[in-house]
Length: 309
Image (cartoon, rainbow, N blue to C red; front, side):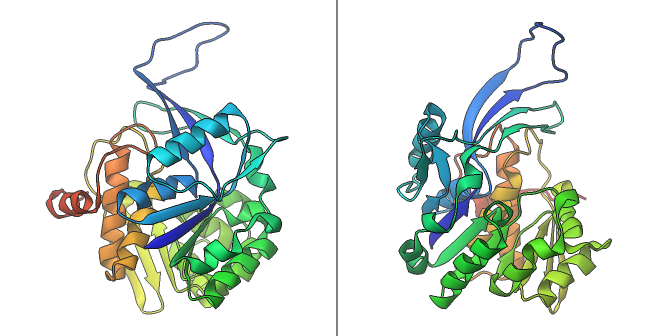
């Protein structure tokens, strides 16, 4: 699998556990503070690389120390960062995530250079040479640019997948409708399906994407697992029973596992099980890069671990 991940790159600063923010200039001790690469492009790239894919990633970051560290973390994970565009006048996107004891993660976020990535930055040759293009957060580059990129990929026989970034309440169908004919696999969460489809029912919303041209919709539903929706019907994939430390990057890990499974010729269900296993492995630690697992270990986890009732 030779994949280009395109879109959102973020440096996450994660603090755990945080039950409340001290008032005034108060302080409190925590157990862990980590910095990791994250985002719908970078986070997915991390798990794809673990699962044996050859990964190149592209998006916009700053020339600041935050960008330097982000590149260092990605390269350490075996990801080719040469396609990243660096901005001198814009900071690298970053988030501060105070992780609650139950794994929830409110966010303090800087959009940064992600919103500056545009048509002139697309590595057209690299996209055409890839076996797979994963576009994370098409809302940031706009439908017109996203369509150009996805159509270019399809014209060269590249498998395409898209993950959304915005929460569902900010989504509208016209934001993504032009993209749908060029998407083989759409991997949103349940809130995004309802929001972007402008439907009240999850399955009805997913089928609206199928009617627009998407090949398959794989919906993540947190602790309830995943839902596969195709023209033939729907199928539920349960989540695995694990002690959740942090849910950061779990959606990206599912996307990576699902897409890696597809690249290996697995059925959609088998691919989704691999995605759920990857998400469960990441959820047991802090940050999108948690876990030193590979494909064989993820498969072993899926075969031997208990699923949630």
